[in-house]
Image (cartoon, rainbow, N blue to C red; front, side, top):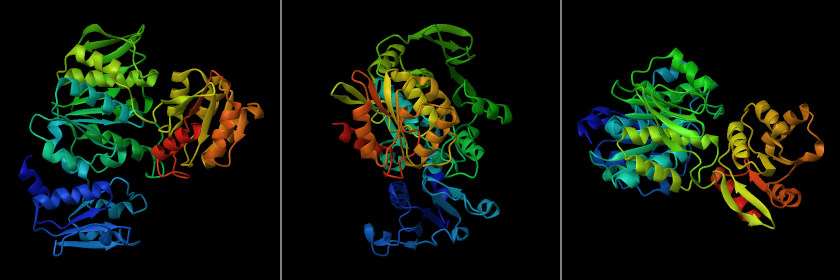
Length: 458
């Protein structure tokens, strides 16, 4: 780590850590280690925060707690914002006066040349873990950090100049970044997190920060099949080398699919790379895109081809992502609680193919469900069970298309939804939880929802 870079960013500045959850705590711990005498400020909505954590007396630390914790942001030279805090309700002119950074931004300033950054609306956890898994076959000197709950500063002591750092990046982590990874991956863009941003375009541009601040010797690895991404690629200039992946068309650099074979194009030298009929745990077209992104990254980082192919076949995927939850009384149950948007639900139904019952709905964030309703009308799924406000809105869209009412069931609770599924799903078929909605009307997060699903089906 270049300590001078860190000193230039922090030393002799009035620094506020905004939000003191897992990432805020990691930021403070890291900064306090390197700046033992500097005064820091912590702002958080939780009025009991100062009593919850072990702070040393005379630690050069001050707190701004309670409902007004955002009122004095303009008093600080540098604000290190936690990802979960939204500032969308603050005046734009006021925001432009603030110097807002984040742990992700500071970490990128220190280690960008070693970082493989992965973002996208869906698939970033699976792709990050797949890349990490393959790199682990190649070297022990690799770390996985980021959005899945591993604050990067917690791993700083384990980093040397040769460490590969696989960093899963959310839009919240990227929105205040002014530095980018050496290898940046953008998997896709769909409507998501509309409760956090003023507009869908704001969300898109936050994602594109992963490439906006790259250098000419960096690599931008992105899907060629996404209309929103192609639009922004046409509007903005990006300095790095573009490497793409596609299910639909040949690309000039990167991976593309043709006749069940993934081909790799290396500046015009095209060769077959991976037969998609080989045994693997990652099912569905969406996972073929994740696999192609991983191939691009791992070839650029120098991993041997046989290790990449072995890794694709042996990687078992992640919990709550089309996870097989067991067969009970002849019914197969799959937990896809990570599905918080229509596109993820559609991908899961297509990948599993034998779905008789689908559980939909949850917290309503204003996402457009017309495309999902149109898909479900022709999907062959026999039973649709709806929960929450989002479920009511999906059901309303489906009724507009004339789907027979006895295919649709409204559950008053998550538990009732599972009971209906047990009763209605045919033996030999699949009951799938793939809600196409956020979980935080009934659950803390999608993990809690998925675990509850697995408990109930047992």
